[in-house]
Every structure is written in structure tokens, then in C-alpha cells.
Length: 83
Image 1: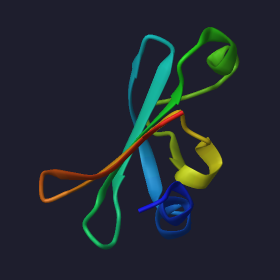
Image 2 (image 1 turned 60 degrees about the vertical axis):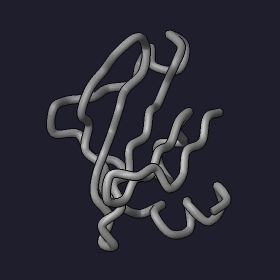
Image 3 (image 1 turned 180 degrees about the vertical axis):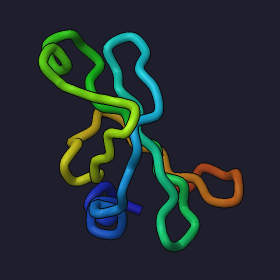
Image 4 (image 1 turned 45 degrees about the vertical axis):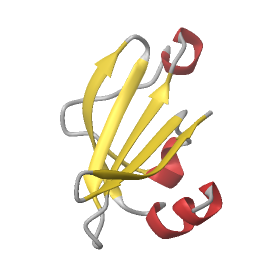
């Protein structure tokens, strides 16, 4: 699977904020086909300086422009991408 296919297939899936660690916000969700989508946004202070997040924040993959994406199904990684 290529990154373009991931955006096409999972770009509009709703992802919920799950954690923050070292300048990165992590969002995750489960797609209709059972694939778990985990993404990370940020990685440096400039990217997140004014980024507002609450415990209830939801975003889509296409809006986030993440620096890391991981897709898993049945406990196995089926796609992983780093900026």
C-alpha cells in the first residue's frame, strides 16, 4: 500500500486525540473495515506551538497532515510511514 492509497481509503476516518509526548500529539481510531489507524502530529515545538487539543478533540487523517502513520489489523502492522 502506498501513502496516497492510505489517504484515499482512510483520510476521512475520525481519529480521537489519545496522548501527547515530546512535541507529538497522537490520534487513533478504528476504520469501518476494522483497521486501527494511529497517527502522530508534530515532532517539534514549532509545529505544535499554537495547536489546541482537548481530551475530546477529533480530527481526520486528511486534516492532520501527520508525521507518522501506522495501520494495524488483527494485531499485525499492515502499513507504516514516517515523514
